[in-house]
Length: 251
Ligand code: PEP
Image: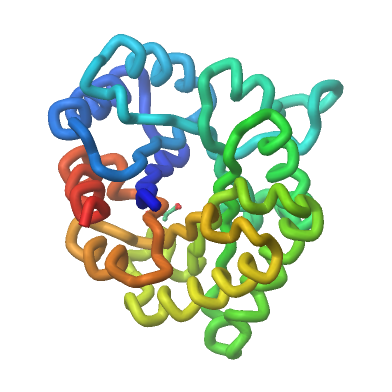
């Protein structure tokens, strides 16, 4: 299975900055030897779609959104449906990022519904799970990530084989504190076992690590047996760093 390196630009960028970042990525992407995506702010999906279409050296780059509505259409001011994302060529949508759980109060059940809406439109949800520092220190890491994933399994049944999971310890996101390869692998193994129990097609499901993955630590994380790629925040905004992580995923 190819590894997947997905950038999460979060609420960063501008027309000019995105163009410069994609031009710099185009210089080094070539045949990446792994799957590569950028999840960009929704207003820039059309720009990213157009630039990828116009730039042969970005042929391997796919793109996605950072959230999706659980609803198909209607009176949901400010929300963006999966079908709308599909109109702009999205391959992926992040759901349940800890910043959305934390700042927007998204529940496990809502995240599961968002994953379902994405799947129904042919978009692969990148389902984020992860514990806070307090939960880790209390010894609740496994319980928390299993509860978060169980909601998605419960709502999506056999379609679970079409999702991507991202283990993102909340204490490691944007903090410069990375889980050690051993800490990450231990949680990934738990998630793998949970997916294995839920679908016979478990081998299709990629489990990414996210949380301060960077050019320096990517190789040691990506070599772990149950780490199938990375969800990259800060380092995805620097072309050289993102390309180094992509090279590390090639093995
Ligand atoms: C993220 O936001 O998904 C993330 C992993 O961020 P960072 O790499 O900056 O920790």
